[in-house]
Length: 137
Image (cartoon, rainbow, N blue to C red):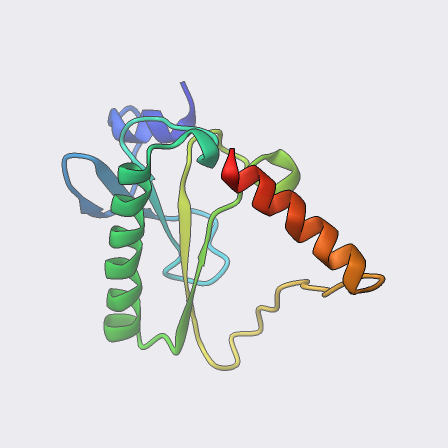
């Protein structure tokens, strides 16, 4: 049983901000920015590619509501909504979840986002063709 399942089952405490029959949202105990909230399904799904579309739609709807509340009530200037999928992508808990992180002008947080370049347009098209092929299967 992972930590999120323990939170859902009330085996460990969490500061819950939203709950319905399928979804739970609570503030992260190690926030990137204060107000950083996690949105999870009550049922454990993992990875994102195995999560039902209706569950993903519900999670994103809750993320939207949390983001609006962060903007309205915390005065956030923007919001990051992030889903890390797989350990190599930074996922720590094997239970699909979204991070809803309020952002404030001058908050000092910067993503280490080093954009890369394709060698040429042929390489880019070859990669796009592989993705299109995967979508057709």
